[in-house]
Image (tube, rainbow, N blue to C red; front, top):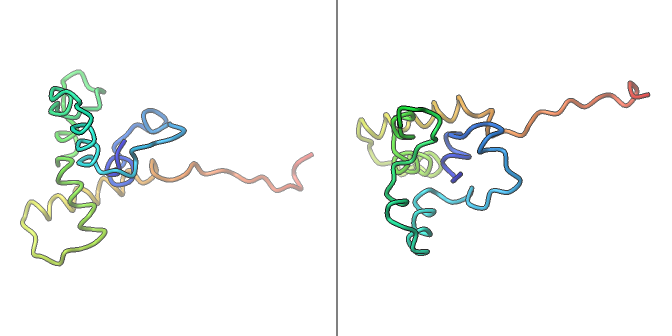
Length: 124
């Protein structure tokens, strides 16, 4: 996944597409991943396809599920990290709210697995 999916809104399946040993593009925004794809000559059919997790039989897109596009969520992640101070439109305020809600509800996916440490005295 990319930076917004993996560390912003947690839009991935825990122990599914999020269960990896290395994530070489996780620090890149989706716009940067697409820029690399264009530079590499990836087919337009792939680059222009609506992102979908493929978990639903009805073909719903990531944007339909999250309520915002990746461009909007990328903007929100950047805005929250380094606020511009400019007045926001109603849509921008809505995207900020969506981003925060998704981030909060999916924080468990972005945190390391808790490990119970057994007291050495209880080990045989």
